[in-house]
Image (cartoon, rainbow, N blue to C red):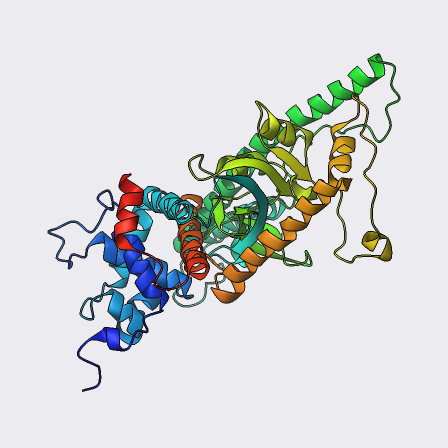
Length: 457
């Protein structure tokens, strides 16, 4: 026999797959959508498809075709599927695409499980950070606003030349297999697509301009209020936002929702999405909140990312983040109504620790009541508590993204479009949390009866 009578003989007792099975069996999966009967496709229970997706994402297989192949070649995956079930790639992809809301529910329930198992504190801090994940589209499929205008003018010229050629009886014929009407139609179709791309770029710019105009007016009003109070106003005066899109604003034909973003150390650009995560700073390194945005800049991401942490999972006491998230409006919004205290760097700092950094520090002098928010934030970060908390940022968020990208191997979305990409990022963070929770509690520590009581109690 090529395989044992029982696949459990080939799957070690301390394997993560046993932990995953116990966890999923305790979840309420009645709301999950599966392929409709009458389609001719084989039916599979939602628990099987959920376990299959989570395990394969946790072990670095993200394509539905790769997952289908694993049901034949991977012993642990065969064990998950009962040894005889092999969902096809279309069934897997459809299940993944149509159950985004319920994946989020499972994300919260796994964190609730972590709380029941005393590895996740009810009250504590979070570290907010983001990373660029490549979109399922090439940056070479993108066109800039200026280039689209130039190509439209060129196509209009070529259409006119072809029409003139059609009217000339003695004109030079085209290459074999080509016709003037077909070439005109092809150029007109291309022109229409480029015109649509320019309209979308203009609509996106108009939305950004409204936000930028509001920020500009707020800065002007703030400076005028300081002058009226007799204060000296330093620095450059704020500039109003431009009236038209920039020449480099781009649109991608393969995944229109994705954007060209700086990646890595900022020395190159990718067609990407900005994946956000709020990571526990109390020792578990679990992801407590997740979301995806098509905006490359993190300045507007602090408020929605903090809000992505479900209240039943964590009562957030403080938030640590880097300078990319700092803005007066965002910090005030997070801290409003007795919200968590924000510890954000005001300017970029290097990772190297100088001799001065090693020396014992005295507590800084508290800023006056009329100090700016930037001064208050500098004071917070120079206190003993602030220094301790801010160290947790690079100890929490950066290792999590490192595990997702290097260990799990997730560097590129398989799906296209912001909504579908958001579903996939939920799956990635869910798979990461399952891996991490298994690491925290160890094998054999998860009791199915305890889980059932946790979710029904």
